[in-house]
Amino acid sequence: MRQPGRKRRQRGSIVKRGNSFRVLVYAGTDPVTGKRVYLDESTTDEAEAQRILTRLLAQVDKQNQARTKGTLGYAIEEWLRVQELEQATRETYEMYVRRYINATVNGKPGLGEEPMSKVSARVLEKLYAELRRCRARCDGRPGVDHRVEGDHECRVVRHKYPPGRPPAGGYPDHDCATASCQVTECKPHACRPLANASILKIHFIIAGTLSAAVRWDWIDRNPAEVAKKPEQPKPQPKPPTVDQAARIVDGAWAEDPAWGTLVWLVNVTGLRRGELVALRWRDVDLTDSALYCWDTKTGTMRRVSLDPVTVELLTEHHERYEKACRDLDVSTTADAYVFSYSPTHDRPCNGSGITHRYARLCKRLGIDSHLHAMRHYSATQLLTAGVDVRTVGGRLGHAPGTTLRVYSAWTDQADKRAAEILGNRLKRPK
Image 1 (cartoon, rainbow, N blue to C red):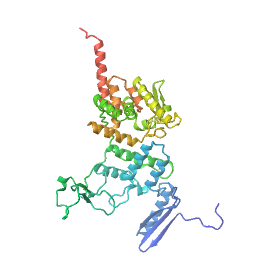
Image 2 (image 1 turned 90 degrees about the vertical axis):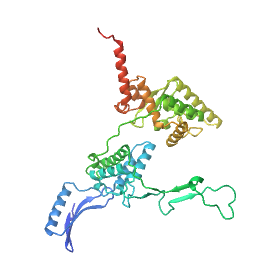
Image 3 (image 1 turned 120 degrees about the vertical axis):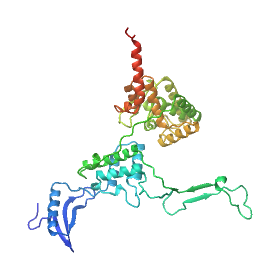
Image 4 (image 1 turned 30 degrees about the horizontal axis):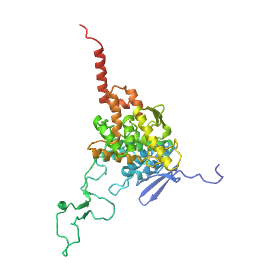
């Protein structure tokens, strides 16, 4: 209750400074910073200043003013803090934020320094257009992509001299290319556009953040909802052939039985990398020939049936784990991870490490492939064999419609075979 004699705080004021009039209107307290928020405009016309005051007061009454001066970067941090994400996904999001949202470009602060209230659909579309042209968002002028920040030598040569002590007059001049000297240098900048799939991930991060900001009453609307974003790229899975898959499995097995078992399991189940590293022995039912994995995309548990050979390989893999525990005089546990670098399997394998090791294996075998392509291999082989789309999607943990969208070419082939089967069951009428 207002005390008697105390004046009510003025909601707005006009202050004359030289030849201009500054209009200030109190718009409440910033929910992020806790500071008072004022709408501020200036004019050289006193009558116009009065009209501005009236307009801003009406704007505050309608709650159309910006509710916070908090930055987009701060909002992203708060959004990530409350998201339930797989660790690899979280690291990917943080990488996109660091490189493309918060990064300083041509000496100017990144979009993360922009107040949420000033992030408009136009600002977002401009960001996406710049990334499509060049992921470094360069100004189009010739430049150099420096290896490191700060003062450094752009070209460093490590000469390769013949063995032995140098002659009295020193080493003679030589051709570095012929002598295979190691040259490290900063190269001229070449624009590399960012793929639409990556820009869509950036849009997802910003849209999710601004949507949360609306729920938290930090801003009134989400401009990402109307911003034009790149089109979803058409999936083009490139699975290895049957012969290549067999060579990859054999090559992995030659390196290490545990590594061979991992590659085999990805081959026959199509598990995602995150699902694979999170798999524990309690999730594997060797008696019922099935494993149960937590779907990292849909957030649900699904059952994946196993064939007899896979059950046999997993049984041998578990026996190796039991032996390692006996040698260390520790007890086995159902909470142990199926695949681990630790002999007691108390911590999971590193997902990135698995990806890089698989890439090195394929490179050594002369096969152009990657770990996720084995998931495509599992799907396409099932569809080619005539397994129905619903079953294939269930094994892979696909959302409804994803299997048809991603593997449309293979489902079309299966549909043609189905037509031939039905046509051959009947005789052509005379």
